[in-house]
Image (cartoon, rainbow, N blue to C red; front, side, top):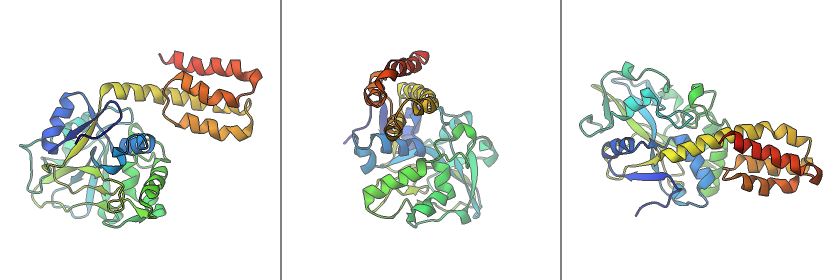
Length: 306
């Protein structure tokens, strides 16, 4: 049965080696782990399948040939929702005629993938096969990379630094457990460098949103979520708008009673649908004498981005 997903988020179910090329040909962008975490947090109440199902992601794990000390995380999609040139080269390796004995995609030379988004992770810094308390999850290098922590990834990939902590709290509320989000990785082959896709699992008590980098690319149960072009355009517009809206927050502090600022901040942090939605949610907190100017400022934010 097809998943019930937000508009413009398309399920590609089946073997990864078969679906990746179709997804790319449709000009869709495979969802990254960070974007999936955001989708769950923002849309999961309306679309429960986001929480009760899993997805393979655009974030890859690279196993260097004969290397038992390190793995690499390869981020293939930047924070504007665009596949990077290096990322496209890696994603195009996921095809039926390019498989190794571990059912990962063969990488002829690791240096072919050198560039933005390829991040070395020492194996001794990965806590494997163990559910993590929040403080451990927040300090786990692999999770920090997958969540696009600005301290761990290049600027063009960086997302909200608070995402990982907020997401852990969401997962804990779903599982009822204080320890969640385990990590699973495989060993490297002696004869080939290979890559696989990180999978973020469902949030039931058994899986607890674990992330696995050892699944094969030929499983019939593979699943990518592709973001349609119109979703990416809308998201980039929204990000631009929210940047400007957040820049206005200091001005609001001079106009609005302090006890209402937290509510307005909550509105700004939510996905924005329309200028009318923002005005309806926020104007009631603005003194009557300042409402005309407040409305003009908010409408100007939208007009400047159209």
